[in-house]
Image 1 (cartoon, rainbow, N blue to C red):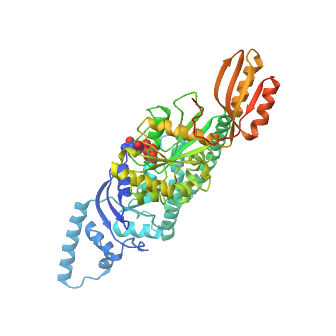
Image 2 (cartoon, rainbow, N blue to C red; image 1 turned 60 degrees about the vertical axis):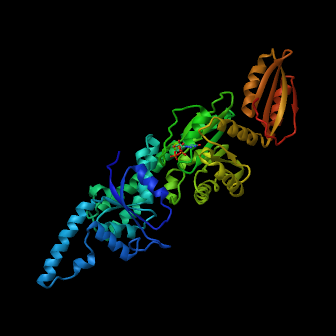
Image 3 (tube, rainbow, N blue to C red; image 1 turned 45 degrees about the horizontal axis):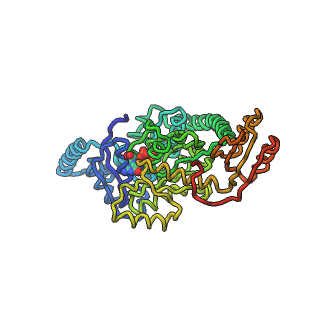
Length: 465
Ligand SMILES: Nc1nc2c(ncn2[C@@H]2O[C@H](COP(=O)(O)OP(=O)(O)OP(=O)(O)O)[C@@H](O)[C@H]2O)c(=O)[nH]1
Ligand SMILES: [Mg+2]
């Protein structure tokens, strides 16, 4: 666990639930919230100058203007001493370690906040990255987080290099073990090294993906905003209670893959890192190899927490689609409205209507805690998988050895839904992609079997009886 910091919060957002959850997740103690209603943050101090001075007062830190003022008379000098004493007392009482800012803070602002408040300044992304760091357990996740942190720090370090104030920063880089410019160069070198390592990891993944495809397994990624219930859904779909679930943000960092509970069903589910608003592209890029799992999946379950307010649902959906849609066609997304169990009888109808109007009538409604979710999700997956596939009925001579070799081949190019022996014949029902029909017919005729290809039908009957 990181040290339990005592923090104050700067925000201009009325909605504070998410930042409070982030602070709670990392385990900091929130002492006071400084909220100011304004459209845009102040370019210098984030909050307006007046409000900022109030904070300095609260913290008992010196106001620079006052410091510069020359105290002339004896009375002024005594007053000044008294004030300084009071400040010191306030500073000790408040005992604050850091200021959290619920926004992305620019390097200049970051510098001014740290200097003006004599505190470490942690903005929204910095906070998210600290949580990532705590939750990163695999080697890959650790590298990803390190890369994201370094990329995030670079412009901030640059600001310090620029201002030439090494060693004065209260929190940054844990007290300045290195010269700022040396650190800057080291960070740059480390970034390129990690990027190179990722290229190797990515190659390895590609090979694994290729193997899965050859095995004709449907790969379904579970994506969605953080805390939407993705891992809970993976538990239900796979029947594996060891999948880690937690009411914290970013409980899952590295992808986790499990087979569908019913082993006859060739479906693999991959749970992925959650999305969140306002992540800068460099941070998202650091997690690209994780996101690749989503982008290359056959289908994506986009999990939406519908216990949230309508505004929150809209905001989170937009954040999710901003990441997904450039790389995943909408036809590959299955929208899953989760946590229906949290809705009251009265609220339910309204929420369902809202989801249907805003997300689409193809959305499935589930509670990931309920076993019924599995049937619903599976049904939907199969109806999507069948799109673009034709049902075929095949009869093969059962006694031939070649038949058994052919079965493997058929499984590679089609989804087999049933296989039975009847009158010395093997009867197979399968779903095959249109462009693979010729190949299948070729295999069957080679064995002197029979094949019937049914026209494609868009029904919702589960593939497996
Ligand atoms: N009531 C209710 N709670 C749920 C449901 N699904 C998930 N939860 C709870 O929501 C919280 C988050 O669940 P997770 O499955 O860890 O969510 P996640 O999307 O994997 O979250 P991250 O990995 O942190 O991004 C946990 O406390 C779950 O128990 C649901 O259908 N109903
Ligand atoms: Mg999770």
